[in-house]
Image 1: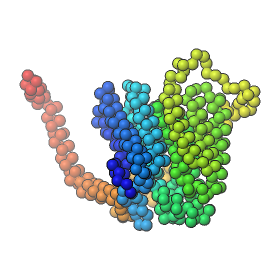
Image 2 (image 1 turned 45 degrees about the horizontal axis):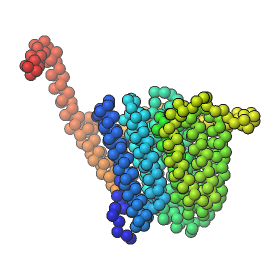
Image 3 (image 1 turned 180 degrees about the vertical axis):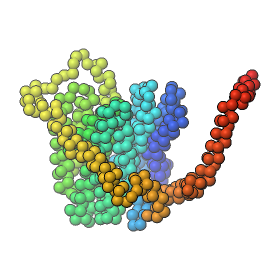
Image 4 (image 1 turned 135 degrees about the vertical axis):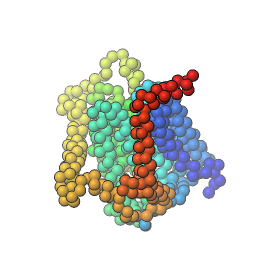
Length: 511
């Protein structure tokens, strides 16, 4: 291996820096240091420092890779291990990951810089930038990860940030309901990713990219197809392809900058990147590739027709982006993964600029929004279907959102009326009983496993020795004693003579 100026292990800083920025902004908000003009300047400094550092780091790695060769798989040790399951803390440094990573970092920096002015004096300024940094950490983890487990973590970070920012105006019921719709739909994709990860462990013995690539050749076609189908489900849901299209139109409820980076430029292409990364695996599952091509073509037709019927700028841009992403899925289904990757990178840059310019588009127009073309309006049935977005949204509500809500209500009713009666304890009592159980289910190893085990052990010791002990722990006794003294001091201050003494002492200190 060539002698690199930048150690490959430093790539872990790329997702870590925006994650730390999100945590720091959250701490500033909790401490009251993110309010007002001064607070905005602090949040801006943290955000821009993290975003610029990540972009420079990725550009340096890209230049180094082009000059000295790509490091490929970089293993930093055990991330988590339990029993026969072993997950390394690994990253992949090649043209695909660093290319996508550089594009994502550049778009993130441009969007965050734009957002500083766009979100100025908003009540949720710090909350918005914490969510945006959380998303940046998620997408960078997805594109740089060396195994499916790290991809899943980044996948969930993106989903969490998307849910938070769709529901940014949480005082409006429309925003919270739309955030819920997006959250529920993406859980189907997450289930597909989890299924693919478990099947890869069972049938291939690992979840890193080299294992998936080499093992796919040895497995029967049915097994490879099932693994590939899990990954394809995750990609279809995250990129809002048919039949998962309805959630993304509702996601525009969030602020324009989040729409730009999530649904116009970066997150909507995450599914394309995942399938491009899994190209060798997909080649062994021709039936799944055919399905990808068909669904991509259906998405392109759906978005093309629905886009003509939109009357606002953001919706029109969204459906234009969906049509292009559908073409990328068609290219992947036909085996043209390199073409799909280039298309995704160029389209992301172009569409990000369009979304960020969307607030100014209405001022550029001399007249009303152009109507739908004549060939569409003359076919009333087709025009009506395009206006209604082919009725996929109410269908998704009936098949997913409403049943999920009903199931949650039914489970709650069963828990309260049946389970509590059978065990003779309320839900609160059962939860306390479960938390007080001392059984060790599994012993974690590795970086995260060891950290979780150490934290759980020390928190349990703190709780039992200082807080609990039948309500008479050391911390509890200390707080009770402090409360007695404070009540005594308060009773003294309520008496006029002591109150006069306190006032005189205050005057003396001031003078």
